[in-house]
Image (cartoon, rainbow, N blue to C red):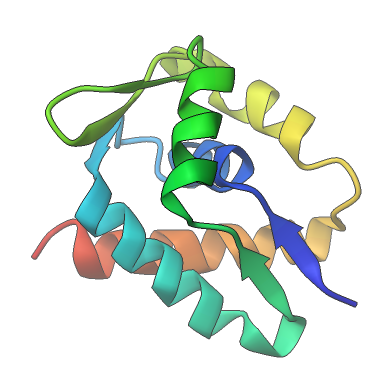
Length: 114
């Protein structure tokens, strides 16, 4: 079974898994996305990351995400990250979400601090 994450779901999970982060540039976010895809390839994870899909997610969820100087800014507020992310995560098992957040944290630690 394929596990599909659209850009909004991926970004919401990123900000939830990395609570100390409220901004990330697009280049680093793409590297984290590639890292997560590779790390979870045995679980058939597909994270859509075309320009049109990302821009559509930014526009459709402008209350959560903002583009500022080639950077994605979380607008949902720090206390709302987990609650908002749950709305995107319907249909995923808690085991998968644990693996996803672990891969996101690992990618954040590797790419956001280099």
